[in-house]
Amino acid sequence: MAWVKGHQLKLYNSLGRRLENFTPSADVVGMYSCGPTVYSFPHLGNMRPYVFADTLRRALRWKAIPVRAVVNITDVGHAVADSDTGEDKLEVAAAKERRSVEDIAAMYTQSFFEDMAALNVQPADMYPRASQYVEEMIAFAIMLEDLGYTYQLPSGLYFDTSKSPGYGDLALLDLAGQRETGRVEHVEGRKHNSDFALWRAEEPGVRRVMRWKSPWGWGAPGWHLECSVMSMALLGEHFDVHTGGVDHRELHHVNEIAQSEAFLHGDRPWVRYWLHNEFLLLNNAKIAKSAGPVPKLADLVEEGYHPLAYRLFLLGGHYRSQLDFTLAAMDAAQATLRRLISRVAPLRPLPVVETYEPARALVEDTDKAALAYVEAIDAAIANDLATPKLLATLQDALRDQDITTEGLRVVVAACDALLGLRLADLDPAEVDQRRAASDLTPEEVAAIERLIGERTQARKEKNWPRADEIRAELDVLGVQVTDTPTGPTWQLR
Ligand code: AMP
Ligand code: ZN
Image 1 (spheres, protein in one colour):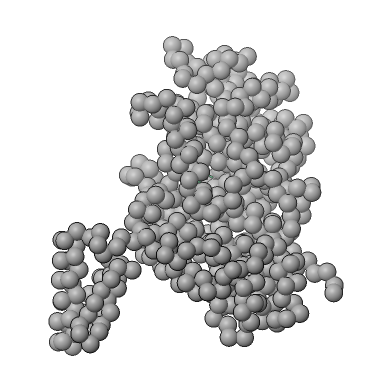
Image 2: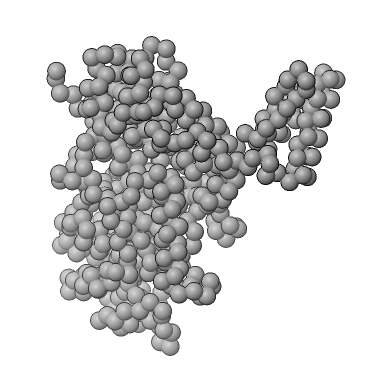
């Protein structure tokens, strides 16, 4: 049998903004994903980069490419303004909550890990903490200083972006305007708006909580520095993949690249593939914490949605498309997850099929239909991680009359290795954690029964539009009505 590699994996590289064949440069692909700033609960939008990065890892595994994944934990250095001015996010949160910065970091790091586990995101190989790498960051900045890339101001040590060839290429900044982006704050003495702090010195009379001694005085590292330093420390000077939310493409990653390529004496590109997920919107608007509390995963769970229904919702959009979060979309995702799990549960136990080659080998001589699905799965994931197509392929296979049960098992297992929806083991009863009818207050029960009464009346009067309207209303409340010869009964979905 000829060895078939399947479809060439193509990924959209932000560096150059084009779809490219993915070719690893090492036996193990180094992959660095910008991690959470642990100063508050991550919101639903913050989950998207990690589900996306997890999908990429699963795709690489499918293609039998080993990965070493690093996700940093930003527990120091991220200033309130994303550039570098203002206070540290962690210190502001600690003061507000009257707790130590260590407590704040530990609590929100824990909450991040819990969310990741609930979303079935595979753990990274390493989670370096920024606060543990400050000595290395200082050494890195000293090197940049020796190479002539920096200048010192009373507020800290700055990177001179005019010395960086190709500064802003990733963001497609235009040359004329590249260093004069209007969205950054004025910093006294800064030569160009885009110059950024490698080291943020304490202001006279202000003592930071997290402070280190450096050649530029007591202070703390700049936010961009940590990712360059920790990624190189753990993945080597050059590595293959760097991911993050699309906002990072415009500033944070631009600055990471500038300082890293300076550090590497201009050996470009520092990292070969840059991948960015688009944003999650909330009711079609940009998520803004200033507009009130932004829902987090725990809020959805409290409402009775399964975390994996949120993962399914995310995978229903392509990672490079904006995705609008609404409760109606969550309802649909929850219903789809419920149907999927009850459909696949009788097929269990599923085989373990994580890579293309064995998946193909399992079906190629026995089941033509299953083979076609394995090829379709491969084509979808290789096409820049087309998860919506993958979900559609799974649904098609589940409806197909021509596939054998054995073949279907392989196809479902292969889809799940890429989708991570726990099709192999999620308990159908666990999917629906909506409140049981017995948890409803008497007022809620009365309201539901009043609606059902109105519906019965509307039906008697043959007012079908009104009856349908009430049914839709009940649907939103999660109430499922069944008409029996003795009258309607109801239960919570
Ligand atoms: P932070 O903890 O603020 O550093 O953000 C963690 C990750 O979430 C980063 O990769 C951001 O780019 C990403 N992110 C922030 N807001 C959104 C959003 N609304 N949709 C998708 N990703 C986001
Ligand atoms: Zn980063």
